[in-house]
Amino acid sequence: MREFGLFALVALLIVGTGAFQSWNLALTIVNMGLISAIMAIGVNLQWGFAGLFNVGVMGFVGLGGLAAVLVSMPAVPEAWSAGGVQMFLALLIGLATIVAAVFVTRRMPKGRLKALAMMAVLIGGFLIYKSVFGPARDAIESVNPAATGYLGGAGLPIVIAWPVGGVLAAAAAWVIGKTALGLRSDYLAIATLGIAEILIAFLKNEDWLARGVKNVNGLPRPVPYEIDLQNDPIFVERASGLGLEVVEASGLYVKLSYGFMFAAVLIVILVLAQLALKSPWGRMMRAIRDNEVAARAMGKDVTSRHLQIFILGSAVCGIAGAMMTTLDGQLTPASYQPLRFTFLVWVMVIVGGSGNNLGAVLGGFLIWFLWVQVEPLGVFLMQTITAGLADGSALKDHLLDSAVHMRLFTMGLVLLLVLRFAPRGLIPEK
Image 1 (cartoon, rainbow, N blue to C red):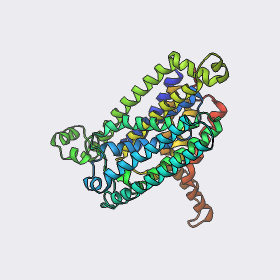
Image 2 (cartoon, rainbow, N blue to C red):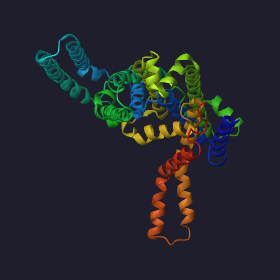
Image 3 (cartoon, rainbow, N blue to C red):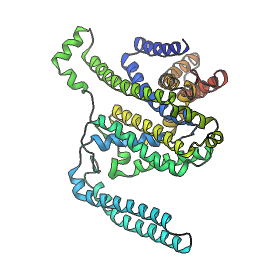
Image 4 (spheres, rainbow, N blue to C red):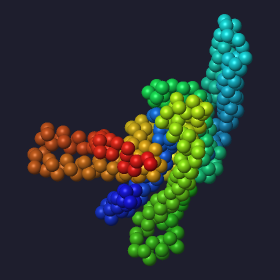
């Protein structure tokens, strides 16, 4: 009854938004709530199941967004002709350098000769890589930089990018996990945050890959465009039959279509997460979370299990990142801020209930609803409070300007209230 009541309350808030504001806004909250819930489940897998403190969520979300570009956008033949082959060769040289360094590390005995060989491999490989990569990058980015300036993608349906985003994030998580999961929790948090910043910096600066801060606009849609619906006689007739304006009806149809697709993905991930939680593997993960020393004494490979759950949680975040870029219709690396993609998702997990997948879903919807609605409510509140003050008053101007910070204030207030009165979250772990 507690779970049903809380979800009913969130549903009532969203329905109220549609009834008193607009149904387009309500469906926008629903769609981003679905994506946020998926992100929260990914973080809950890592923290709630295994106690891994990962604050690099935005890096994996960004890789999901990159997957949407690489999969769905058409290739740019001129860029491929200018430097595509050379770029591919440069990446192979970089990979070969890493493989050679690993070989030297594993095969050669410790000593001065090993150190010299490692330096020779790394420095020589880097110089060769730069000599091929630099000209290829410049040639690609010089091809119509106002509109393209990058290699483009595979031209496939964008829905394929969702699992591909999960694979990219999982691959990055494997590399990060191999180097960082042996660290203590606070150092792990610092390492994952730093690596996430590196990934976002890579997306912002490597124009040949995804145009960097120039953004990639006009990603293909898995649903119809509003203008096509407005020009469809059958759709116009049905909208008129429902008493809706065609423009409004087309927007609602598109948002509902996205909502059904996102809901299907959320249900699949939630069911799999629940099955994993109740399986022997899930019980083992919680045992490791609660007492690593005892788990090791029982013969459990704690490091390998941590790596598994870190990869799974990151893959879920990557899927959510690809879905969000699909919904936005563009990749904007500059928008990947820690406040939105790390702090906010952690608030969702903590408020909903760490270790409870349903709690993560509840937190995703509730916190996103507050994130959207609090700022306009704050402006209305400040306007009401300052209605009696003279225009131009320093106090009035200060209070009106402070309304934009209501989001941060509310998130902190909600987090403090939950930690004080429901420290295990609104839907605690059983």
